[in-house]
Amino acid sequence: MISAESAFEPAAIDRCAQHRHDEQWLGAAWERAQVLVVCDGQALIHEGAPVYLPSGRAPTGERYLLGLVNDVPYFAVSVSEFSPAKSERAAGLRELLGLLEPTQAALTIQAVGLDRWHRAHPYCARCGAATAVAQAGYVRTCPQCAAEHHPRVDPAVIMLVHDENEEAILARGVGWPQGQFSTLAGFVEPGESLEQAVAREVAEEVGLEVISTRYFGSQPWPFPSSLMIGFVATVRAHAEPEIDPTEIAEARWFSRERFIAARASGEIRASGNISISSVLIRYWLET
Image (cartoon, rainbow, N blue to C red; front, top):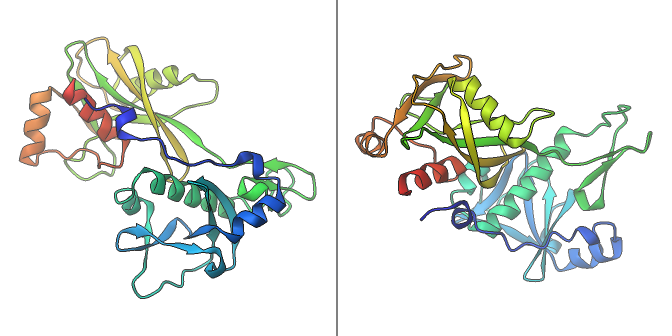
């Protein structure tokens, strides 16, 4: 049976938070490091695998410590443009996540996420002064007011919603192609618990009342900086959905048999395999 634990295997990375202040340790780690070069949401690949350079061949740029894998240090270097070899090319995360095994995927998400955050936050949100990279890439410090700024992660809930007869409701977002359906999702708002966010988003998007929720699993979703927190939610009754037309183009109820037949005929397409949405749907199909 599919589960979040079997779909998203733990990555074997020691993130070395205890060493991020230690310039001597960081210098020694850099000398034997493998380096992933990143540029504005992309990394280089060769024959479907990420390109890691020895530190002596790495280009000049901001360095971010990713961690240790089997005692090998990994860093990211942020550059303004790539200079790929003939056999290399740049690829974005949507392509990369479909190719990489869990540890490679986690390193790449970490590298691209840090790169994007640093590019988007060069100035202090408190006083407006230019900030500097500190703690091996996990902090930006302000020399003017001494503020410290940390990488941003936006929590979002994503849920497989079914009724008491185990029929599930899936939706097509505004702007999505015809036939593209997925689970419901939305960002957590200030002051909400995760369960409250699930209930609010379901009510807002399809007008249904959630009566129970069960945590399923989570997935980093670096588009650009979200953490998707998955749930299975039960609604009170099989009612006609009342959609929010600003977010949802259409929503439909599916039995397992109806979903399988509609997908096989090409009437609908479900989320791609890199998303926790696809895992939630497979879990529903198999339970």
